[in-house]
Length: 302
Image (cartoon, rainbow, N blue to C red; front, side, top):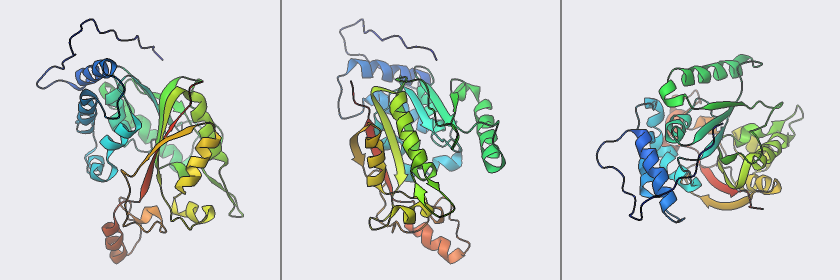
């Protein structure tokens, strides 16, 4: 991957972004300069927010995906993680590319998006079809996705995320349950999740961020009870990350939903609404999206 030269500000005046309509790359450049000029703060620099909003509302978004922004809150989620347009970001298990459509244009000019996803070769059935559709999605719009790099990530054989100390951020959205393993005796173990956390720790630079969104389960439920519902306990995920050497830097309730009882399968809720009964689908639609935790971990500086 290409390296980024440090940006030097040659004027003592505050940097001013151009007014009026500008293309997304110019917004990202402005965000990069402004982020470098400002001291670290709890709030997102305005130009970074503007570039994120441009990516979120850009024409590359799938209309059906964009309709879910009101529930998934991509702006607030990525701001909580502290993303910047000059970062190397690894997204793990992107699925159909819901977040890829936002991250790719935001990072296109000054950063790099690496997608850790199942390869087309060596997969079969649903996994093969999904991987093929994702590759076609990226190939169909090189202006948006031409700078995206694919990193093979295949359960259970290959959970590598890249060279050590090479990424500024690793993110994964609603995939924690996919990183668990259940055998024929219904014993649920975190063997893949442990490997993922170790890989995230290894690939992150010191000070780098792991951002996790996951489906929460009811506090009284055990791990084997949560797993079939596509949920994991928040405390368990934190424990696994800390065991790998990461430090919890913050939690957020951006994606909390108190109407979710947290003891029903996530796929019964929107957007899937997988229950066959029309009355049940109306009931689950009224509940809304699953109650999710949003966690930010940091790799300690040595």
